[in-house]
Image 1 (cartoon, rainbow, N blue to C red):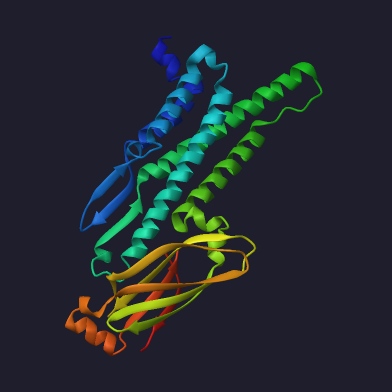
Image 2 (cartoon, one colour):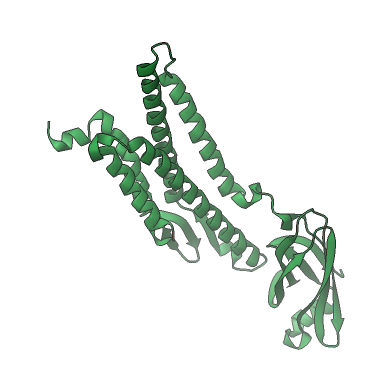
Length: 296
């Protein structure tokens, strides 16, 4: 049997997973389509080279010294790759949500869409499979060691291993789906999500502004980005947008005064819309609308 035959033998077919993990880095992880078309591959991200090194180590451990340490490398490497991929999905989802918030009401917003690419899903699937294989090898070898010391000990059956493996992969898949649909940040309690906002617009001379009361009924101090922006005729007026970082102590409140812009910076049509009350001031915490003010 040649060396190539040994590598592709049935017992070595598990090597396809670290190969797929490495390959996932060179296909799109995020896609920008519509008016412009951009593809960002996994290797271009900060974690890309790290995951590539992990995949090489995982593959190498299967063959090095007849795989003496492969169960530890596969289990540890699989978990690490999974966590890194989930963290990347978290950051990507946060960026997508931020873009959608910033372009809300913009005429060109629907002409550009951002989505996860195939590479993300291939990476999460491959790293989950690697984790499962590492876990299976680890538990099987532990069971065999127990048999050597105690003939009456129970050996975990292959069906049981498959059951646990399916559970592990299912849980990781659910987390990845949640990251895509809702953003992993939504699954984690954030003190800023408890902040309550009450805002009101005002005019002083030729200046338009807003006063915002932010209260924190929670039991933890909350730090967040407070954004105040004006919409005229349904479109966000970027020159009438202001934001700042705030910190609100537990069971306390603060008041912030924002200068939004000058009426002199508006077109005649925009000034007329404001005079007719056809405008809205939105108050956002970390990109989420918490309150609105209008005179219409």
